[in-house]
Length: 161
Image 1 (cartoon, rainbow, N blue to C red):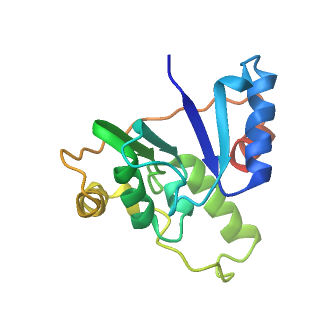
Image 2 (image 1 turned 90 degrees about the vertical axis):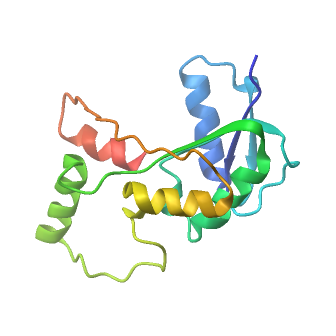
Image 3 (image 1 turned 120 degrees about the vertical axis):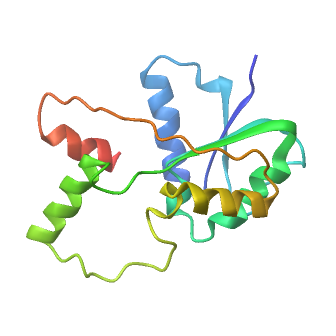
C-alpha cells in the first residue's frame, strides 16, 4: 500500500483536509499531514516514489524552489506531477470570475508579489523550470475539465474551498 503525506504551510488547511477525509468516510490515519514550507520540505532525500501538487504551484512565491525540493525528494525513477489553471478563454470558470471582478470590483487592487498566475500553463515555461530543477522527460498535458452545478452559488464554493 501507499504511504500518503499531505503538506501545507497552513495548519488551518491541514485541519480542513483532515475534516474532508473524515466526511467522505476515509480513514484519516492513512494520511499523515505535515505543516511545512514547500520550498524547504522536512523529508529525507530520495524518500518518495511520487510528488503531486494540485493547483498549489501557482500560489508559491518561488515555485522553482519547490521544483528543486520535489526533485530532491524523489527516488530514482520517481514521478512528479502538478496541475495549474489554463488562462481564459480555455478556463471558462476563471473568465467568469475575472469578468465579475472587472465589472463589480477593482481588478487593479495591489496583490502580494509573486509569479504570473498562469505562468506554468505555458508548456515551454514549465519544461524550462522543471529541467533547470533536474527533471528529464518533461511533458505537459492539457486536461479538459467540466463542472456541473445545481445552483450558481456552487461555483463560488468550488473556488473558495
